Image 1 (tube, rainbow, N blue to C red):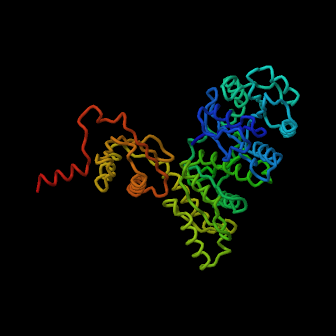
Image 2: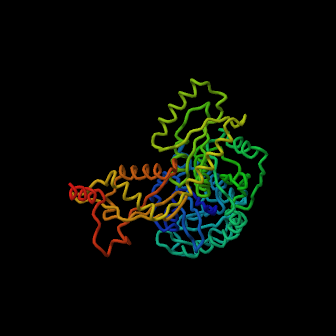
Image 3: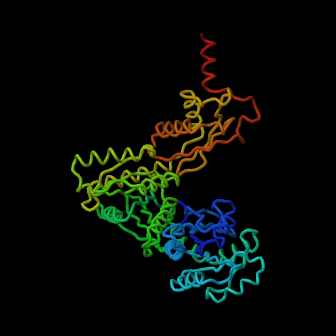
Length: 464
């Protein structure tokens, strides 16, 4: 199970170079960069390494900047988002423009909230311009040029120093991970019954409850006894006050969900049975699969649904979830503890399935059989041959396949492989991943193998 990594948020008024700094720090051009305010449309987060420390870097640049035409709204939204999710804020100002009233406003908000902050003076090709920003009262400014890369290494070192104290809090939790049978996170929109469900689980058959503190934002995970084993309920972390701004709430939900998914093996998505499924629900479910969590859906508040309403709800739910394969759906009432014990059992099973491991020999026998049933479509008249496979990771199971034309594997055939793999090894609902490679295969030095189906056809002809 992955550690809960420190989160670093980049804030500042529009057009000071936040996205350029974000790209420079993560080492790739992920954020859209432009000269006009509001160009960062999506909220971007990226797992990266700064001075040998792993962190999650968040660009808040798109929050609020295109809504209501108000810069003040944008600033409020960015700072509020940073206060909720971040362990450290990089406050970016423009060294060419100098101090502005908006900069003073942001600095005042950060000081009053006492959030750890580094003041970054961008576009400071002349480092002396940074001296003008001491008046913001956020300590010694760090001069950088995100566009040209100057000062970035020094900034990374300062960031590493700031987050070292934060990271030390993870040790107590990491030491106990090996005793955990399953790691499950509960997700969903506000007021759908997530806390009620967790409380119901914690009280099942007087199970022992043990809070574990010490993660980066004072999150509390709960351990419950499961026979002679332990199940960990992974908190989504950071129970600071949520904002009143709608785009901040969605931003915070996404960042917390990503953190939770990376620390869990399975995710239980709680839906409100008295409401319909909305786009935010679907985005969370797709995000769970993208991050490698086995997904289960729990429809809560079923006491408010009669049989006819439940049948209609199921029909609509499966239609909306048609892009999600093999997701199990359960009907519960967390308030009255109906179906909650069975749901926990299924969540533990899903968590264990996501940790599935297969030997190389068994895997390659499956690979040969699956190609005999349906071989990959040819490319330009040349056959696509998958020669060898090995498992390289769990949670989710990740299979590396060596083949002659990796780029020719079509999405439809990939779906076929995933479906057959899950059916063959009896791991429904697991978001198995396949990686295709043209190198390092065991047949590279010898005679190329022909396609399994072609071999079978030739054997049939010889005996006909």
